[in-house]
Image (cartoon, rainbow, N blue to C red; front, side, top):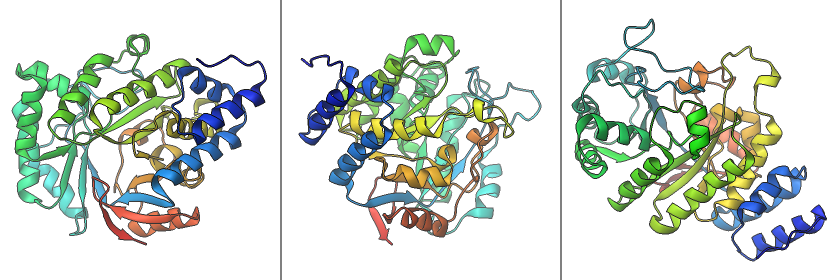
Length: 366
């Protein structure tokens, strides 16, 4: 039982003691950290935890983002990527059309295809299975990271199969891991208000449990910076921590800030850098059982990503080639980075760049 202390310095000292003794932080601790303006102490504590877990290594992957369809039945308030069937700019690609794009950018060291897309109800579940199978047959050495837990729930609905059957079918076709999206904020108040027309909190978490039960290692995100409360952010982290206690199936947590609808959006429309760094650090402190916290340069920008590496982050994502979802919503970052640029980014922060595969096996230490 923690004692409520009116003196913030004393409260921070108590939290620091908990962190240094490997004690788990509570909801109240997390909210206190968010309400504190002592960013440097929070960052220092997160840095200590990360150094204890990962040393000075910072991971990245040579990967490519793919988008088979932007048609989506959901109308989430924060999304600028989705289209309705027949709307201008809507597309649904065949595997052959996707090969054309991949072949322009593919090279033998590429490790991962990261597939992000809409919940398109105009094609059957078989379409999604065929896309994975075709990719795996043509590029057998590339790991396929695809489908959020929300997409698995959607496929279950359109196919009549259970989550387990949907996952087994996709794994059989060549899927190796789920992406972390669709979580947004794991709060039903938030999901109703933001029109998150996809999996509920419980469904999203259940899909992850089923996936982990099948031996899949997966990813988890949080989309922060809109209408959620600080309590909801911390509760989101605690829900992930609880699943991880049960399954140990999450490899990385990726906090992403909401992007405004336009590249020209003013500073008032963007999440403050202060909040971005605090969220990275608090994620590292709250989620003590997921190995990595990702600083996603697409959302943070490259310079803030460097600073995040001393605020608890141990991963900077990957080369990507051409990112579309955050950029559809006005992200200011580059659409991708080369391997050399990622190495430079990490070294510039005084850390050791490590090229990894999807499962954090080390390929090369720079």
